[in-house]
Image 1 (cartoon, helix red, strand yellow):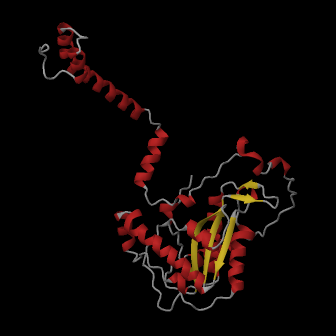
Image 2 (tube, rainbow, N blue to C red):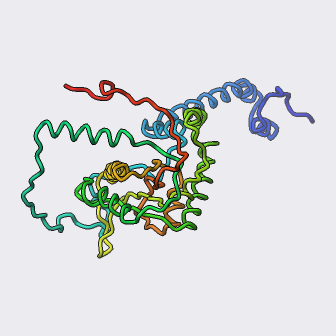
Image 3 (spheres, one colour):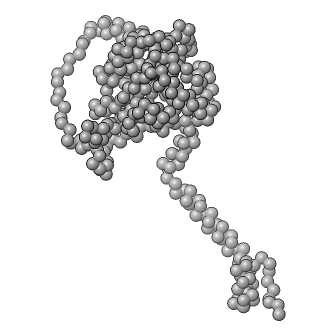
Length: 323
C-alpha cells in the first residue's frame, strides 16, 4: 500500500514525519510550501548576525590590523611600551617610588660667552657636524679604546637627559673578531628577509639610489661595534623592578650625542637599525630580558677609498618656524 504523494523538494525531516503517519496531507502540503521560505529566513538571520559581529569590532582592533598590514616591516622589539604610571596590580616585584630618597640640589653655574663668541662657536660646531656622513666603507685600522670609552662617557654619563634620571641605556662594545662575525651573520640573515619580504618594493627602491643591500661587510671590518640597548625597566640590587620613563626617547637622545662625539674625534659610523635582529643579538651578547636593541654602530676611521652619496640637505627656512 503506497503512501500519499508529495513534492520532491520536501525536506527529509518532513518526509519522515509524513511516511510515519504523524503528519496529515494538509500539514504536509503546508510545510512543503514553507520550507523554501524558512530556509531563506534562516539565511537572512545568519547573514545579519555575521554583519553585526563584524561591526562590533572595536576601532582600536581595526586600527591595529591596519597597522600590521601597512607596516609589515615594523620591529616589534623596539616599540616603545613605556607606561607612564605604575599599575596597582603589578605586585611586589616593582619598587615603591615613595620609598626613594629625595635628591639634594646644588647650585649650578654655566660658562657664559659674549654674543660675538656665541655666534662664532655656534658656527664652528655647525661646520664640524655638517661634515658628518653615513660611511659604510670603514678602515680596519685600530682605534684607541680610551677614545671609545670617552665618547660613550660623553653620550651616556655626562650629558644625555633621561626620564626621571633613570639612565636607561647600555652600550655594548664589541671588538672580538669572532663575535663581530657572529653578529654579521645574524644581521645579514634577517636583513635579507627584510629586503626580500618585510620592507616592500617602495622602500627597497628608495634605498637603491644609496647603493645599500643586506650585505654588511663593515660589521667584520670595523674595529668596534657599539650596540646600544634601551632598558625597558631597571633592576635594583634587591631584584625589584624600577620604571624607566620614556626609555626609547632617552636612549635616542643619547645616541644622537654619541654620533656628535664620534664626529668630534674624527671617527665615522653608519646608524644601523637592523630590523628583527634584537632578540638574537641580545641572547648572543648575554644581555638581560629588560634590554632591547635600539641601534648598532660600526665605528672606525673611514677607509681610504670610502665614498658617500652626494646629497643635498634642506635649507634652514624649510626646517625651522619662528613664531
